[in-house]
Length: 335
Ligand SMILES: NC(=O)c1ccc[n+]([C@@H]2O[C@H](COP(=O)([O-])OP(=O)(O)OC[C@H]3O[C@@H](n4cnc5c(N)ncnc54)[C@H](O)[C@@H]3O)[C@@H](O)[C@H]2O)c1
Image 1 (cartoon, rainbow, N blue to C red):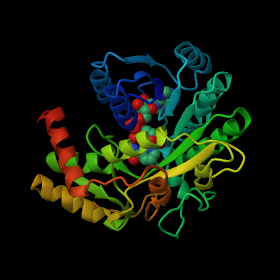
Image 2: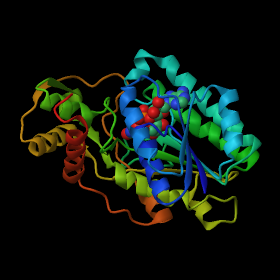
Image 3: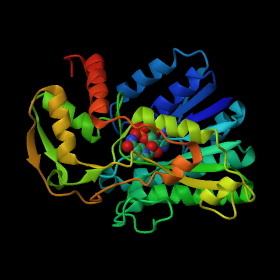
Image 4: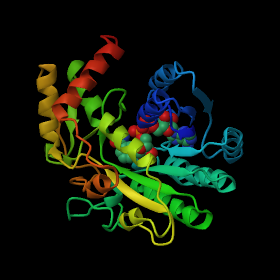
């Protein structure tokens, strides 16, 4: 298949693109290589993808509507994965406009391009952050998502809603994924695992928010990719399809599905696993929870399993070990 992947230079987009390419698909990546974090890491990911003959790449902003529409129309993809976004909860307090531009404006540009020539399946990366301060756990797709705690969450919830309207109006089969704290090799430098490993190895104090008591449903990248790929093959259809019962819309071939581990752990425990893996003790600075943060995330994976079967999840110990191995290979002693 010809598959369009936005955010292909990013952490998750890169891994999904690599999996698709290894299965023999033709992938066109679209990414602006924004400076939110080290663009060299993004270039290095593209370097890996470029080794596949089926890979091509266009650098551009999503919100550059004309360019995106042209690239999309010329490639004429069968499937579309939309990972490009301004990610991160905390930065949405510092620079809220970038979230409106990339996540709302950018998603709109892509939906407009797809309206002209709908793909057979559109997949949108949403987040567990849309559950906001929900206290009922585990988080189930049918729970309320109208009380986001950050603008990041609000823009992602907007993306879900916008995709529903286009799915309904233009019959675009759509799956929205809600990811839960993804980690693993080639991970993001602004996320906990990278910051902790980097801090410990370079003997820097690490900030631990919420006094380490926050719980996160850490999801290893390969498990996430497995869920994404399996869901990509199960296309939502309008009424009459038994799977629609498991969807979230009675008027559109649209659904939303959590992809998480379903086994949250305390941040402090996560740090302990990292310390044991590195054989070093972190210098810790315990802090209050940051604005926009939520106390816990915990995925109900019932819908995921009903749709695509059980995915055996990687233990945090094993996942951290693989990240540390990658970090050593990639940075050596040079960071
Ligand atoms: N990593 C997680 O734990 C997590 C959790 C929940 C949801 N998500 C979502 O999954 C998706 C991928 O996340 P990630 O961790 O790979 O993030 P990432 O920042 O590594 O990747 C996003 C990519 O999008 C590109 N990008 C950003 N704004 C753009 C724009 N306006 N136009 C074109 N390209 C742009 C960036 O250059 C980057 O390469 C995002 O939509 C994110 O919101 C991630």
